[in-house]
Length: 294
Image (tube, rainbow, N blue to C red):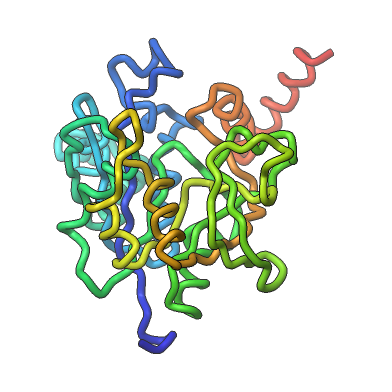
């Protein structure tokens, strides 16, 4: 397959987690629907993947995630009321949400890990295509976007590619760390993986950021991967077995700013960042921040 014919048009976004770190806010609404100013986290993520050419998005959901489906569906009553009141800007804003992509929602019937969640999307993937995946609370900003950078690497090489962060050495025990060989600045060939190693045992400081373009041969391995001792099927297990079978994946270093919105501090940082990007808020909000930081 030539680089010009390689396309990635589908994205898998697992959103089945309970969001326990955000209780009680996440008790009755998905954490992915928590707002950053006036737009939910998940919409920023969806807009980013759509900008990269994605036309179909498969959400892996669980009980209590109905608000996600409603958000990416049309609300005819609301649209009618906005039209009647002449609120054209608001009408335009909400009308475009359901048109961003074609959306599918698949239930993860048991909470058996992130790999098990991604596996639920396998029936929607053709055996000759690659798919982009990311998590529904992990927000990377800036241009070119996260999805675009990984898809560009896939188009050039035809290989699976994961996004990685170059982290401080002391933080390796919080992440899955890759080992491998540097191809050029910002691009590595990974051939093994260590989950949360102590800094002295870490093969590098390159940590998986939860995003990837997965070719079908890697994706289908999830169906046969050996579960962890706790019974969960994890993407880390899938990569590990792929490496043990002699496979490799490319690893693209992502330097864009990132907010892990499943983390309270990062979520607050994201709120501040996006508020400061809004012309109608920036001046007064900056003034307010100065008053409380004296």
